Amino acid sequence: MMTMLHDHDRVPDGIRKALENYGKHGLRPGSCTEAILSGDLFLACAHADDDVIAVLPAIVGWIRTYLPNGSYGSPLIVEAWISARLAERRAAMAAVRAESKR
Image (cartoon, rainbow, N blue to C red):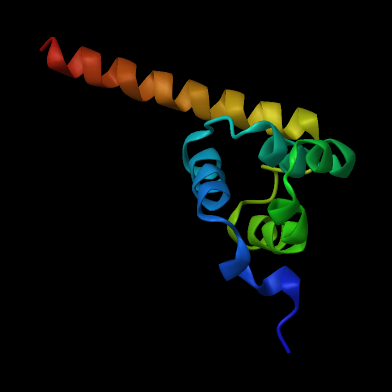
């Protein structure tokens, strides 16, 4: 029997895409999704509509399955993840600029 925690098809497309962009590129998601990543259930529910509240376990399951450990769990971890990915993007852009000047 599949539990809702493993029913990743229930994660809304917009939230899934925001989570993918957060994981790959460190792009800051919306306030509800960021609260979920930070482990703040009260804030997540305050920003969520009824449809998202109904699938919170599926969203948490998606995060635990597809995002690396160390990218979620507290506000400090989320901020560190976003900052690290920003630094990576800036370094990559600087390398492209330097290469284009050659």
